[in-house]
Length: 98
Image 1 (cartoon, helix red, strand yellow):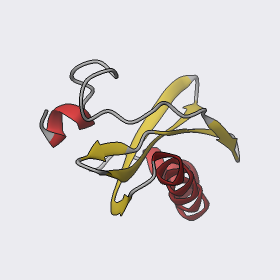
Image 2: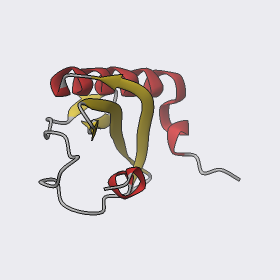
Image 3: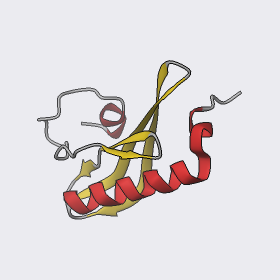
């Protein structure tokens, strides 16, 4: 399965290359869904960040170059990176490029 198909949700979670599911975390009014991406024997740090803004559910996909060998550690690191991004950008995280 290609990286792009994993990023855009092609296929089911039980396919080769998927990481274990982790519980969402609420932080500063945002919901963080840790979604590390399995690549070989490691996991890429990744998370989906969601928040309802003006009555509309907004979502941002965070994908980092960081690789971790343990899926639970990857989920923890994904959450930590998402929290840092929320602290830095807040609701501007959902601004659309012009």
